[in-house]
Image (cartoon, one colour):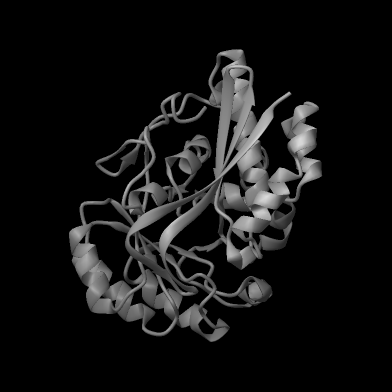
Length: 326
């Protein structure tokens, strides 16, 4: 039996964060709290318009679970009650947190995982002009892994500018579905000469089949094209990696399955995030232990984070304290 509390929160971003689909100055999140006696579990999600989600819609969906939660809804039943997405993510992570606190153990122990250690996370450079991205790269060149937002036209100039100003950093690129099929082969070959480690979602998800027909000099990672385990079989032969995000998978429960499924079919794994606070990053950090690439810098891009938050130090993201989650 758990009492449901839903909170809408808006967290200011440090400046403006821009991708190919637009710019934003706040991270709008929904927080779920489940209280059972004197024990409380929490989860945080980010409703994402790209997937037809709104804060109002996610809140209404979570609100529909009030009676099932009182009646003892568990994680297994939740998977069948709600589809993958932000609403299920917040509730799923809150249920993990609640159970861990009831049992006096950590979520990583409940899930049969290894004790989490600090992991290297990417730091993301917002989409901008090549000169401005060059300046941003100079400011953040101390990060060993940088992620660059792209938009199609002018992308090679942007990447070249970043590479010149952060020569020792590994680089991940994220096109957010902004390229055309004709760009993939020549652009990826040019990018390979700049020593790019990974290219995320160059084409719209609806155009995935085209990736099976073109050569690419840089490994390509599915983001918008990969939500749950059911998507994996459609990606083999088109992508080299998948980006697992809890808001897409609908929580840690499904995300763990996606991780195992991706490994089984030979795909590399990135663990990513939306713009959110440390509460949203903490569950994903458990997945990140086994990932090839980690992009959990959402809280770093905010003007302020919740307290207590995760500790970011020298490019490393440290495990969550029990006061935060898990």
